[in-house]
Length: 609
Image (cartoon, rainbow, N blue to C red):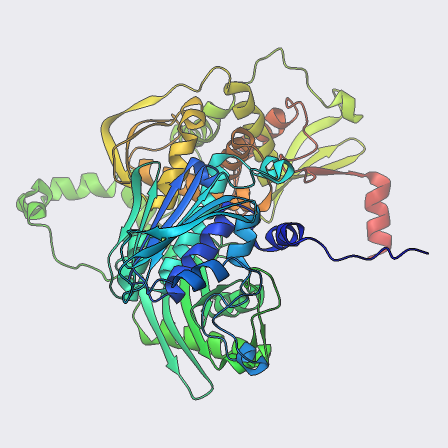
């Protein structure tokens, strides 16, 4: 038989390596920034065009490379970091395997300019499809400029795999944030399509966190500092009120390298137990410094997943460090007991409290409701006032949500129910579930999921015709982190269809010109911030297009939560609206909205209890 095993050509081997290391433009950005850091740069400039598909360029003022080193840097497994097997277990630099530039050169057109301080001229290299086309002297500053053009130009299948520019740009920003967060002593700049996204001065870690994640963290960061002989844990955690629905602002660094670890995330979350809701996550930026010999960072091509010698010890140290920080520093908001001078001028303060006024006050309903056994929530059990408040509450909750066309067919017959099956008796269980009794049993309805379905279909039907925008009497200005600003800018068209009129105002700032009618005055900013946070959370769970994701997010955010007490009228209204929906059985995410329990089902439950 003839021999059939053969060595792969270099250009094919490099493309295979590229598939492991360079998965998208963000992957190339990560490798290029890490190389600049390892070169000792104090200023690094990242330049992006067309979400990295057209151009990725990194300029640094590091030590540069000699002509020979510049050429060798594009060979596989060519590295200055490892000389012996022992070096592999003492790595403290960012890159070390010598695969990045070779992998990039296999799937892009690359240009390199570099010069060392001792050389009068630099070196220019041009590579196309792993082949060196040009190598010649050039004039260039000390440091390195690496340009990548037309990423994956020779691998059409890989290029077609890339997502939208918004998605790819978000990955690039994520990589930039992680790396610049870890090195506050280095100045970083990021330019996208000729506009600066970030321009970060050298400084302290707290300054860098605020510059990257937003000024709202200025007074919310709690320092963490736990040095021991075995491990050192430093950084910041945010006060509990900064917790969010997504894990976007959770950063772990081991020896200055960003890592992903659900295990360590849990250690931090446990330290916040009873301080934040169970479905929210704390914000933190924590650095673990440990002997490299106790860590294996080579378990994943991107080096974002690592293995500790003893995970349980690290978990305990992290959990204790965060608990200590939260208990050591006051994180509760301070109360301002100073009296507003304007209050002293009010009639209630300046005018005498006469006997006539006293008697009128005592006969007032509000006074009596407070005086009755100290129950400020007490209401009269009869009279027009109680009915008016109930009707008003129902109107507030459901008036904007009940404009379903009358001709919409009711889905109850299709679900096996006759028109007169329901006796219209409703009961709420655990302030989360609605029991609707029937002649043959009952329906158990999840109020949160039911309302999600109702809102989802309403938003879906309205996107083609736009929800009316309620113009703000006083337009609100909102400043966001650069990453959130980019996200909001990509969603403005879809959000306008849902009632949010938002205009860019420069420097990651926007003007809220209009809002949907169901957003309360004074809550414009909070509504928008919560919507963005929920959108990021939903987007991380399920990959959908922007339109669908935004509809689901709004339905999730504005639906009646578990734990909210509903009146009989509210339960009936929710029931009626649910069964006007085209798909009442499932929530937008596919969860079951209600369960049918027949009389035999209930009897079996009792017998088997």
